[in-house]
Image 1 (cartoon, rainbow, N blue to C red):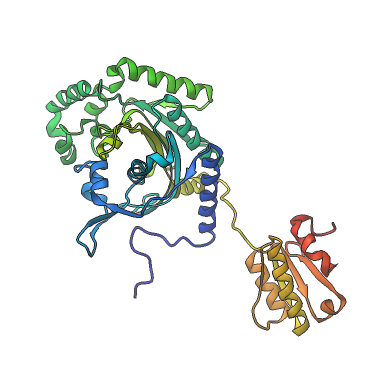
Image 2 (image 1 turned 45 degrees about the vertical axis):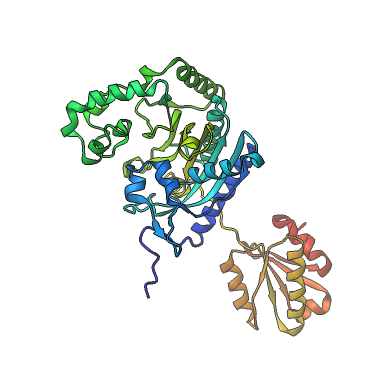
Length: 425
């Protein structure tokens, strides 16, 4: 049997798993700080949800989805992204959730692709959505959440890129102009861009093959074609970001290819990941047309998806301190029959008081238990031998420097609950 995980997946084990847990907790805390509510949609959905949302000609739909048929003959797909599932769930229960709805998700998504650093087939994502609010303030709020989270992780080499891609009022004329511009260069486009030119011409800008070609860089951008309402919306987004002191760069070639994306689009790009072509750690924007694509009533929405695997990689490359491993506070050491009974009681009392505690099972020599305590990373060893049990005391040893003292049994839990103050308090 193959013991390694499937290609494109990772076993998340200590200490890296503890660092990722720290990112999960920071994501929850940041979203909660802004009043967002946690949600989770199914790991797999009806395939139609994603083909409608991503577009049947997109890379996601044609190359990257894990699709299977269940025993009832239904086509199901592991979620390649979370936003369509959240919008579907909102449309199903909008009367209960209210408007606007602010929700967030922390979990896994799945895409088939060539595995590389920061690009796994099973990846972890922090996602934030505001559904039912069309104001520029919602765009700025989700950007601020992403910015606060990323800066809170200590990341410094970040650039926020910002653009507006218009809406159904102004974008059709721009698309026609863009198609007319690219048609003389049709033979210079790669196969995917040629196939999409008349359907999603904006996708040429973010094409991995053609995106940096001179004729693409010289193409007309949407900024000069925004209608009055879209221009005003974009101006207010920039003004609110300025008031929030969030730095950004306007990138007129930052686009989303599908019609349901509207107005604001943004990305946070890491300077330490850019060389691997996986520099984007967070991407988001406004998707006011998605609800209608999924068969619902017109409902505005905005949000982001933030890749936690890439954030962890960026932290490592910037040499930022990773969230620390959660180790037990106390390792309880017992010696002899009398000591073992007292130690079992002490472990339970510590846990009841909210102090994380661990002990060896079975009879082991004192030195062996102290070595185990060191390996667990515990802060303290609480030693209970026959003599301590008879005298009603416990020896507390601070493992970092070996300093120890005897404490009356009744005071041990309170002393250890104070952590670093336990010695000499």
